[in-house]
Image 1 (tube, rainbow, N blue to C red):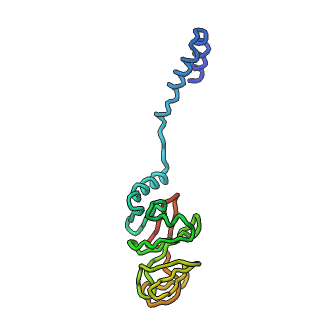
Image 2 (image 1 turned 90 degrees about the horizontal axis):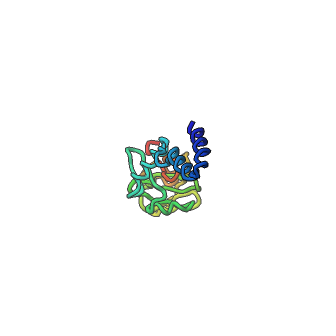
Image 3 (image 1 turned 135 degrees about the vertical axis):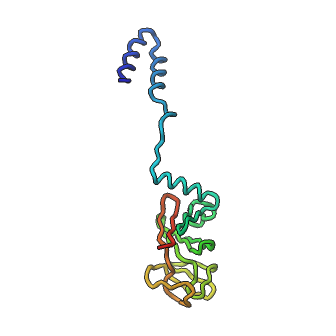
Amino acid sequence: MIMDRLNFIQKFSSFLGISIVSTTLLESCTSNPEEEEIVLTEEEILYNSLKEKTSEHGKFLDGRILYIDVTHEDFSDLNTVGEFINDSDNYILILRKTEDVFQVFSNCCPHLGTTNQWSYNQGSFRCANHGNSYGTGTQNIARCGSRSTSGNLKQYQTMINQDILTIDFDS
């Protein structure tokens, strides 16, 4: 109906020599971009909320779920595949395995429970306190402080949504 009215007015306004002005005015009346409502999905709303909550420190703990903005300056080492961060505040080692895969492990050394002296090389974390190395597999988990000198570190389930890494400490 709007197009019919627009065509009608354009045809007769050309007779009066004002077609360009009237067409512009009519089109601006029929489609106002400022009035268009932007609708966000639930996922977009959650993402925006988490970006806000992680903006200051790069992370946000909600119960037993930790959210980390991997683009935050405090986590800039994670921009490189193969690099890791020892987040001693949350007792975890965060490894960027590939472009799309992050792995998160307990930073508690299975040998004596220390958390602060880790290095990573070719699939293993090495605790510098006594030189023991621990793998990143999901079998043969060596418990924190169990005096184990080998095995794999406890791993937590993760999910990445754009640049927000979610870590589930109950997994």
